[in-house]
Image (cartoon, rainbow, N blue to C red; front, side, top):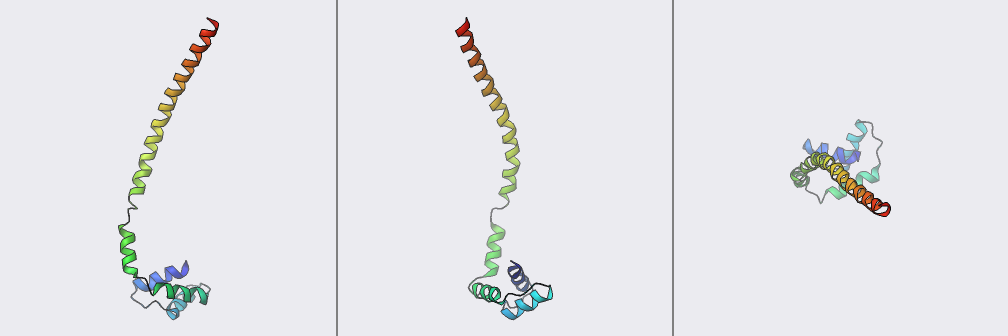
Length: 103
């Protein structure tokens, strides 16, 4: 993952994403370089338009997740009330059944 971050950093700085630049950047921040991973990442990124991916990621509906999380507590608060009513109804039915047996 460190190499992906390094590639994004190079991209944002307007530098070419190549093996040499990734290696230099990684070494400069103390990351132990794995040449195979760097080569694989560079090869994979040659066919990727990073700007388009960043735009699509920014446009993704991530903002809906917090709204759903905010609704969840309200729904959870409503559920216990409904469950309590159902439990009370079941208890009432059970008591009526017992009363019929002994009455």
